Amino acid sequence: MAEYPKLRELYNEIMRCYRCGLCRVSCPVFKYSGTESWNARGRLILLRALSDNNLDVSDSLIDRIYSCSLCRECEVFCPPGVNVSGIIEVAREELVKNGLAPPEEQREMQKNILQVGNILGESIQPLNNLLGSTVDSLPDSSPNLVYSGCVLLYSYSQIAQATLGNIKNAKYDYTVLKEGETCCGGFLKMIGYREAFDSYSRKQLELFTGREIDQLITVCPMCYSTFKHDYPQKLEVKHTVLLYDELLDEGKLVFNKPLNAKVTFHDSCHLGRYSGIFEEPRKLIENVPGIELVELSKSKKSSNCCGGTIRVPYAQIRSKMSEWIIEDASQVGAEYLVTACPSCFHNLYSSSIMMDCNVKILTLEELVGYTTGQLPKIPLYK
Image (cartoon, rainbow, N blue to C red):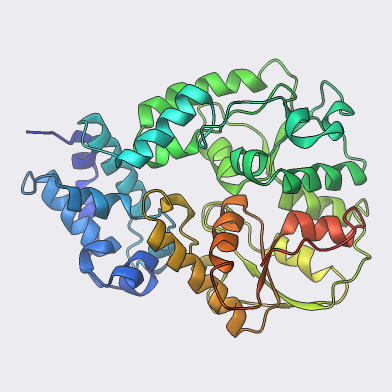
């Protein structure tokens, strides 16, 4: 019989759940399924039974444990403050150690990271192949290293180019990993490959040590959270939202090109609940001439998750979770739904093109690029 010692160590934390059911209100996966075992309370009941050896592992149990997006919204509403996401991560780690998880599709993503170097399975390329001549003009070394992340580099390189342009226009000294970026590895930890993540992150640190880097500037909130909180050697990390906020205050970024539109902002889980960055992106948006910022009905700490962390293999759930955010944006009258997360952008954009609505999806990177005059027009993403 499989044993789960690390899960057993969290038994008291699991038992702190007194089954009030407030997580039913907040959990988007439960909203989709309507089934008790698909919310935090239900999952903790199952994990208690598993820890007590009163439950066998089945495909249904794996689905319950791996359909959690680790968005932490349930933790916002949980009266005793149970560390649900931490328990779920440990449960996944134990299942992986026993060869029982994750779902096959996520095993492929794990192989992509460890064998190829990014979650998408794309071969690592020099950044000038992906981002053009901007990279060639950068210095070989700088105290500030900009790290775009897998999604931008290999799916939306034009947004990564806009990011580099924004920072260059502010005359901020920076460089990139010209030889090519490899994944931060955060997804390994999320799906239960903790030992693989620890080994991978130590190797990743070698990319940064010896380069005399003072800080890592990330575009992806998951990369930001992973580097800042999960790496064995803590790095000085700054998300581009925080950098833009500083540059705006210093007068190095000037927002003078107007956008006369009603705009709303979606708080990504890793930028918001994981990292506590809520006000800075709103400040940036409100400084764009002509914009009227309106809030979604669920925003900041109670923001809805887009489902990005479970889009493989739970694509239908992810699509519905993103659709709810877009519908919310439409209901508050927003013309643009802005996000500061590449993964959220991908999920929201992918869902929006299948919907009958007029809300356009936009990244904060491109909004900054437009209002500072770097981009001639707002990119039209349906």
